[in-house]
Image (tube, rainbow, N blue to C red; front, side, top):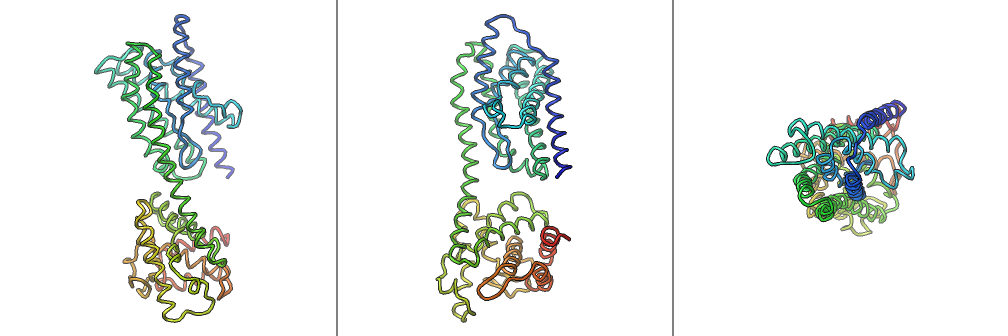
Amino acid sequence: MEKRFRLFNAYVWGIAGLGIFLLATNIPKFQDGRHVAEVLFLAILVACGEAAAVPFPRGKGTASMATPLIFTVIVLHGPAVGMWVAALATLRKRDLSLEVPLNVVLFNRGMLTVCAYVFSKIYFLIYGGFGSLEFPRGLFAFILAATGFTLLNAIIIGQGLAIQMKVPFVSIWRRNIVWMLPNMFALFPMGALMVLVVQQVGPLVLVLFYLPLIVTRVSLQKYIDLWETYSEIAAALSIAIDARDSYTHGHSVRVSEYSGKVAKKLGLNDEDVELLKYVGLLHDVGKVGLSDGILKKQGPFTYAEYEEMKNHAEIGADIIKVMKFLGKGEQWIRHHHERWDGSGFPGGLAGEEIPLGARIIACADAFDAMTTDRPYKDKMSYEEARKELIRCSETQFDPKVVKAMIKIIDQEMLGK
């Protein structure tokens, strides 16, 4: 933890220091009062766009809606003005009230300053000057410069979050950034159009451009809300299932956590790990179709009762298959009671025939069942459950899944 904190702190102050250096060596020069007034007006528009920033679904970063306006300032007024506007006009109320740590505030200023500097260098290299944008070379220069700004911004933020959260950069990129890029790239032509409008009419017309910015902001927020809705629905359903049986309270949450950890150990991609955690949370959702007499029975099942109980896997699969996102994990729920040796249900699948997600949930489900009290048995210790998983490897469980689960038990629960 200490090493990660030092690395994150060094990264944050490194970006902040680079930004401060660039600002100190690029002091704006204004022609007259009118020039100052125009820059201030553009800075206010940037501040309004920054106020509509969209939070990342994972971590504490945001995606700003102000970037097309920052591009406009750089093209029309040069890199010095552009860097200072990017650094200062993007300050938010939380930054000024010190709700955000000072080093993070300075990091954000440095990041935007560095990105604005890179934009200006690319634009000047291709177009040869500032103050105007002429077709076609100006548009080409603008698009390339905006691409450089956006990608560099994403890389700096992504690397910072990766260090802070101790996860791979590619995980942050896929989860928080890559889905935003098309929306951000779609704003580039509008940024170029802003420059042309200001050249011909003046900066006041830029107020009209806030409608498409708002639309983009709403579409991004809808995506975030959708992810949160999936999580809330899954959590609500799992709580409803666990609430029917006090002995399994919290079982679904633990199975979800174990499943995600095992999936990571096995090297599954971030999307499958995320999906598996949701599906693990809902692996017993089919129990809504069972009677209380079956669900809460404390003694052994009769043959007919056991056959009825077995239906919960297929009922659960049928429930989630209609969901656009979670439906991809339908087979994981349907087959999470299959056994490696082929003696499970409902399909009698064996070995690699059983979907990997189902094999992972089966192992996580069994481990939690063994280590929690039930009406018909006392819980095992983690060491006892560990030995039972090893004993049942290659008969009930996939050996490689057991191996990954054992590593988690040893590292996190037994401290080996």
